[in-house]
Amino acid sequence: MRYAPVAGRPFRIVVLISGGGSNLAALLEACADPAYGVRVVAVGADRDGIAGLKTASAAGVPTFADRVKDYSARAEWDQALTGHVAAFEPDLVVSAGFLKLVGPLFLDRFEGRYVNTHNSLLPAFPGMNGPRDALEYGVKIAGATLFFVDAGVDTGPILAQVAVPVLGDDDVDTLTERIKTAERAQLVECVGRLAQHGWTLTGRKVTVP
Image 1 (cartoon, rainbow, N blue to C red):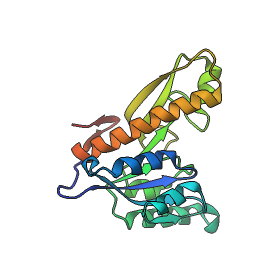
Image 2: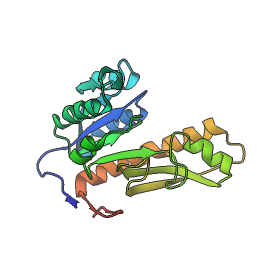
Image 3: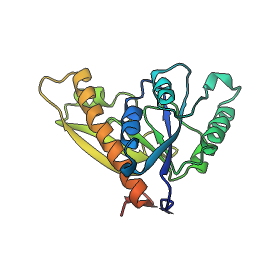
Image 4: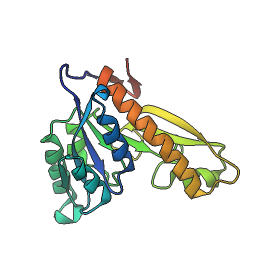
């Protein structure tokens, strides 16, 4: 499965968030440089009034919110989210702290074009508490993983990983913050590479020329 950027226009991304949007802010900062070659065409969320949506609006980026509780069934939410994202014709969808699992319709529509960033070195410590679980296990190296989303929980093909040493005096907060710093840099760098070179998915193997 090969994905090639469209020549002659910026690479279009939709970013999905659930909170403050620090990863979004890093992407928007990178996109301000025309040489980066990427445009955030919309920001979506699963709740109203969050800081990330305000950041997007201040940057002139269209926003939308699809709250699960506003739909009678999860499948209806999935359909609405899929439609809203598809309307912006993205080359790539980026989950940047989006705390909802999308459904089969969304995964089918954006197969091989939906990436998520997670604060552990997958497949170790999936789920909501990667840094905490890493500390409790006693690992010496933690980090962040950027991967293509599949139907599992943090199980998709891995695009990139960055290592973060665990220090002797680390607690969950200090380790989490250092991982976030590395995670943001990795996300910005990888989205830029995908925009320039495209990518190929062959089973679990991801190749960026």
